[in-house]
Image 1: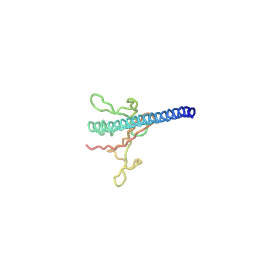
Image 2: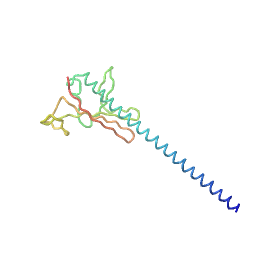
Image 3: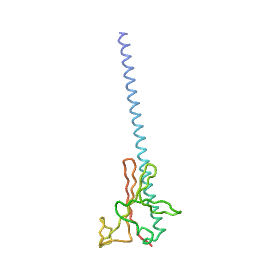
Length: 158
């Protein structure tokens, strides 16, 4: 009977070590998943901040320029014309091409705006209802395999 107990004790030790190993591996997996989610949330927050910064800089640019002389009313509109904002001579300026900032690529696209008979902005631009005092701005920030896009309308309020 003593011989069987010694063999049984060895089996118990092997099972205990296996269970502890499985629990440790599961905890490591949970820790790794938590780090990945935290990194993803951090990048998403940074991308959101970059879009808000672009919009705020664009409002500042609009307010410091004349709409139809050197402002948003003279910007080339349409897909394929990406821009970003940069500080030039201590003022915000619209610069052609997208911008790479760390692991992020950001751009803004300007589109013309048209309004229907009720003065509502139309989803699809219609030249007959063109509103030269409003411009649609689409800001995009891309990183890794993710893209965050936001749309804003700016008007010639002066």
